[in-house]
Length: 117
Image 1 (tube, rainbow, N blue to C red):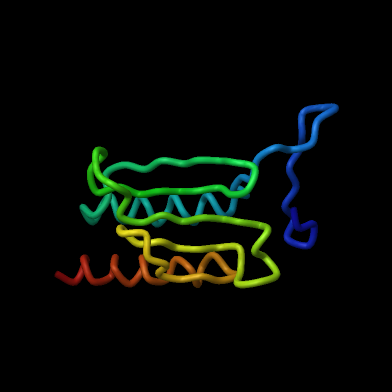
Image 2: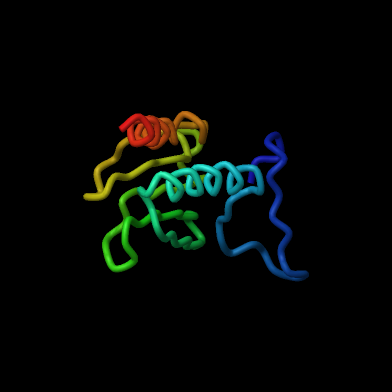
């Protein structure tokens, strides 16, 4: 993890961390957007997955469908295209970047559109 960003993962004593997770401020920003999308009637459910390579947040319109949006954090991509990637409903990359705020921007715009309607 990046000590400059204040990210630390505390491992169980005697073990290295074996999964990537979201920092508290990252999760707070993601869940804030999720709550506003729920209030706008766009999303109804979410799922999170944590593996050794990435942490994933997926938002669903309905539980049984594929996710309408999927956000991945891959620290291994930090020095390349950025560790954040936002995927659309059909798996297309909507945005990549180094900053979570910028990567979430397309969803923020969608939220503003639905509020205006």
